[in-house]
Structures are given as structure tokens and as C-alpha cells.
Amino acid sequence: MTSAIVVGTLVRKNPNTWEPNAFDSWGRGQGVGEVVEPPFDISDLDMVDVIWPSGRCFEKISGLLVADQEHEQ
Image 1: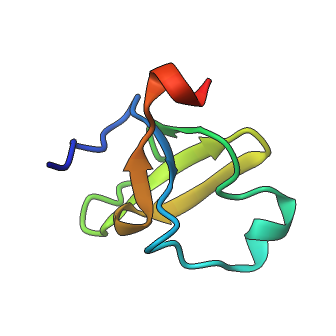
Image 2 (image 1 turned 180 degrees about the vertical axis):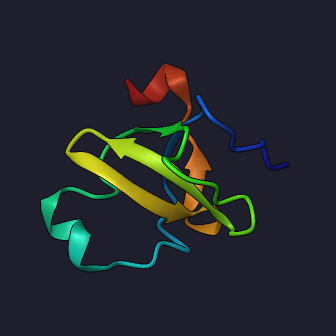
């Protein structure tokens, strides 16, 4: 069962589908991030805007999992 990933959802990277890029070096995908309202419309993309503890980045929804709040904090 998949949960919807919308603004306000806490997420973590999905180790099975995560696509590394140059931003991983500053902490992208580490810990728990929060999906926030993007600065422009991205509804036509399969992406969301995530604030990670080390910064903000657009992420493919397929590379994310909903964070288990009880075990992730």
C-alpha cells in the first residue's frame, strides 16, 4: 500500500529506487525531509519539493517513501 506524498508529508529516500546526483554530497536524501509547496507549478512532473535537514531539492516521487514518524525522529 502506498501513501500519498503531498505538501506536509514527511519522507525519506527509498534505497531501492533512489537516483543519486551531485547534491547528495551536501546531505540530499539523508534523514527525514518534509514536502513543501514548490516556488512554481510542478504538477505536470512526477516530482515534489523536499526540505532535507541539509537543504532543499526537487525529488522524484518514485525515489521517496513516507517516513514512519514513530521511528524516524
